[in-house]
Length: 129
Image (tube, rainbow, N blue to C red; front, side, top):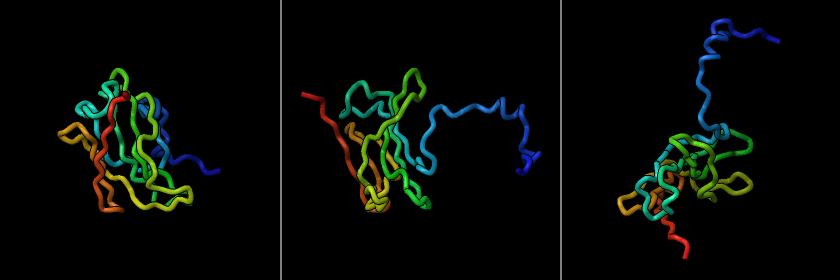
């Protein structure tokens, strides 16, 4: 087994490294992020949460990403994430689109750009009856 490269083997530096606040699947390529503070077409308890466009991998044998996730934020820190919009990628890994960026539009909806389909999607969610 090779020994660690001495210029990177620094236990003190490792001990001082801040760990990630939230981990995500490698190669998901998170590109765009938007906080939902002004997303008035979504439930009020989503304010302060974020959505992230995962552009997706390009060189994995089993592709990942090509989705938009909602990141739950509590006390100013991300605590979890879950799929928000999926479907750009089939079970076989074939894609028809790839989300790139997200933004809250002036009417409180969410816009998602897709560079593979050449589209911008507008997303709203009405309150439950």
